Image 1 (cartoon, rainbow, N blue to C red):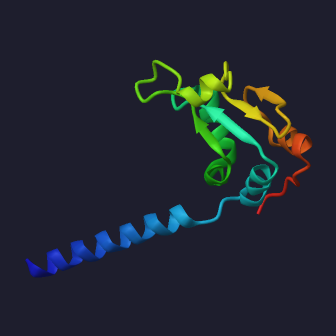
Image 2: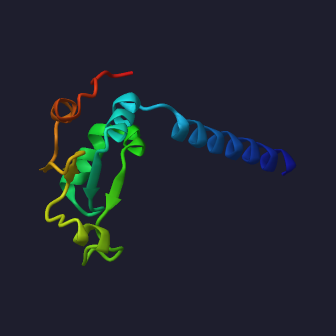
Length: 122
């Protein structure tokens, strides 16, 4: 019985280690996403928005480097004050330094053109 408990603990520790390692692993677009941040880009979205989910998939794990504003209240029925004050009316909305905005899923190439960020995959 002790051997089974020890084996289970070892497997559990290995799984936790794998999850932590995977979460901290660099994304393919980290440098590009960080450049967008450095250029003052803000990404407004909502957790329930299918187009936001598509946009998130494009960035993958590199999304963590982009300033993201969740506009939906937790119940999905209203908009948070920050987004109301910013007059966000569609998701996703990309706002660039100077106030220019694009709505909808944006190709990486478009974001690169708008910001001057070099689009390269790690």
